[in-house]
Image 1 (cartoon, one colour):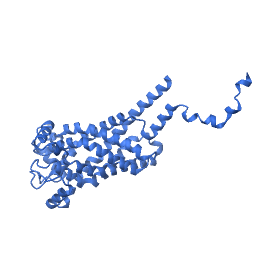
Image 2 (cartoon, helix red, strand yellow):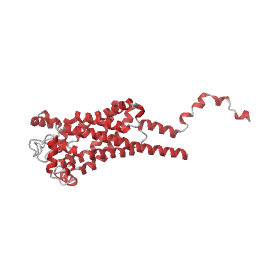
Image 3 (tube, helix red, strand yellow):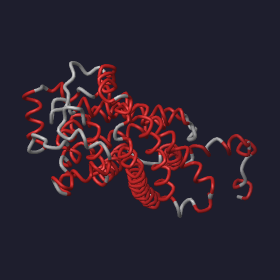
Image 4 (spheres, one colour):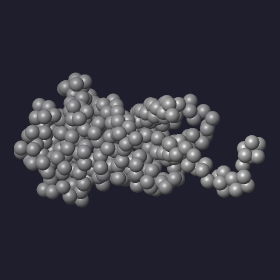
Length: 339
């Protein structure tokens, strides 16, 4: 019996003992691979996490966004053309409309931010996995993924952004989200809801490229400073990296944001209407009337919006992801015990 129990020489070859190891438990192997390259989350989980983050971000910072829109939409023919400074814009809103004026059009933001950010983050995560090719520190992959994400999400968000900005204007002629949407479609056609889409993409492509590359690089740098306390300070890391990324990206792309706002608000509240949606034509018109300073109008509230907004967004997004990760890990452990 002892002789039968001892393995024969052919079963003692090293290649026989090593061969089954990679596939010994394919379920565990697959889970490990996905977790390291894709955070171990499903597509729908990225969408939900992104949707929550987008809603929290934009709703929390909406008053600042209202001030930015009013400052950027001003022209020499607009009734509020003298309100060009941040403090003056804030005082004008509070004096005439009260605090509620800062939240006019927030319903449109609520309807658009959730779906748009669900698309935004899910596309980003999957593109990042594809382009990085196993290298999580590839800034080119992060930038390219951000560009693909914004092209997809802007197609979802632009119509609601048009409605939101028209409602944010002082003395806006619209009663609410649905009234604005119906009147725009009836009087100007569906094309008006996408008149700024090209400008939005051209603005958000460099914005997200700078944003995501800066975020990933800053996050990595902060984690390397104190690797032992990363798990305890994860929220601070995400918030700090997000704020830095948001501020830098906002500063770089302010001129295109001014063009986008002008296109979305044209013909409303006495603001100029442009013969076409040419970016060059709008830029020339702005420079002719207000000089080059007109192209950076609203840069302060824009940075004041995007720095904390990005901090809120990334913190919320990463927190939501961690909840899903814990859920998936718990589910995986339960499955392992059951088998």
